Length: 302
Image (tube, rainbow, N blue to C red):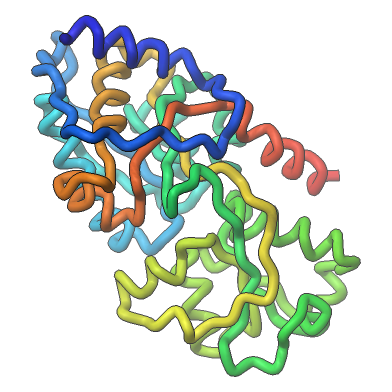
């Protein structure tokens, strides 16, 4: 049983090659039973790094049960570490301070331009491994189209945010905006939660965010998603990808992959772990799925 499972996971690890980034792994009909993992000598903890796409305390709490699941699967403590910003998370991975990291698409593209990583799995949410970004305003705003944003103040997330910066800027530029001239003010607010709150409180007129941010804010702050109105959507991009440092022993990388792939929202135990993350499960990682993100990032640097 162990041999068959590890052979399957080895195929998935080498994958980073699936042709369709939106293919969803069929849910298991029976709960997966993971083989007992015996940590190799020297593997005494797993440092799990996160990009702070939500407020640091919010994202750490949402990943708490996933950390506990990994700890049980790997038979070692799991330490959840959240970077100060997107770039800090990449820097810490490069310095070897994280063993496992969950990266948003643009952060992953940037990380892989600076270091080698072993990619393991991609997130699935709302039944898909891809998601749109939103440009939004407060529900009572008079602005209803992108053209109405001329002269508006705008909140972005972080320069390294895919939906909260990169693809929102591309959409605006494609619609003829000169961001420096056509927006009255641009701010980087650090995370998606901060952007939503800034729009809600009237500190900025509009903002950019990811598809699941309204639901995340409802979970963390109890704020009704109908507080906001989406006025434009960006093209779909792959969701977050989980990677380990390049010198991670294969047996540990395989065990992490098996642990993550065993989770499915079709099972109660899986829902308890994945629910706080608004995930359905995971699918094998596909590096090529992030090529469009790389291309847009290169385009906007010109």
